[in-house]
Amino acid sequence: MSSTTEVAKSWQRCVASYNLDPSQGWKADVLSGAEFRHVTGCSTNLLKTAIPEMRRLFGLMQGLGLMVLLADRDAIILARNIDDAHLPVCRRLELREGAIWNESAAGTNGIGTVAQDCTPIFLGEGEHWRFCFSRLASYAVPVFDAQGQVAGVINLAAFNGNTTRPVAPLVLDALQQSGRRIEEQLFRDRHPGQRILTLGAAQGCSAPLVCINDDGEIMGATHAARSLTGWTDDTISTHPNLLTRLGAGEELSFQKAEENVIRSALALSHGNASATARSLGISRATLYRKMKALGVR
Image (cartoon, rainbow, N blue to C red; front, side, top):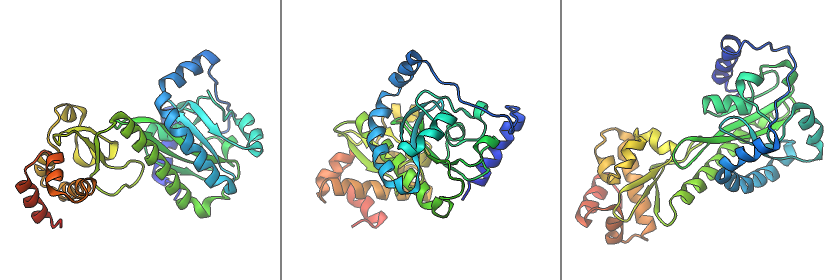
């Protein structure tokens, strides 16, 4: 549960790429007021969407003594939810707005390592690179924007060693759900008033969502949807028909995605086949043929 592979890769970078001494004390550099305003200005949409979710998550995790931190893609802390008990640790470790926690300077840490690897991580006692963070527990996941790129990192942290390790799977799962909620809202804000369909069940840090216009053409896709289908910005920029694109794939994952799209579209149209076919940009006969082939009733 300690994300062993990610920790090992990060430690290797600390030795081979960064030449960091784990016994050396360290404090984060902190941006000036003007620099921080510039950085937050570049992350306005992320902050607007993430702050309500951070508050919800903080309330959920308070009994475990975990604070909530949000950083941008460059590992700069943008916002935090803490209580008075967290203040001494935050002051000592510079866990504050404007602090830079990139892995190349701080060594293995939740924010910096996830910004580097774009994959969830849990760091328990002794798994941060620097000895001065040995009691720091950290859970972190990437947050993806509407174009499938990493927008930032959301992090749960506490200076309590392995106290939370018994519930680490639950904590990391809750954090990933928060990341997906932020991503989905960013995606919906990017495509207001358009149909959002799912290609399958949400897992990990990203939900496989696609946006289509009134002609059933693809207008956008989340990180998970792009990973599932192999679509790129160039693919999406041509606005291909969603079902035509999925139907061209022979892999089982494409067939399952096509089934999920049809089920989602039927649900949005309250089971009306004609409306569903129109929304997907296909004829009703084609819809019925696909439903029969996929076992959708």
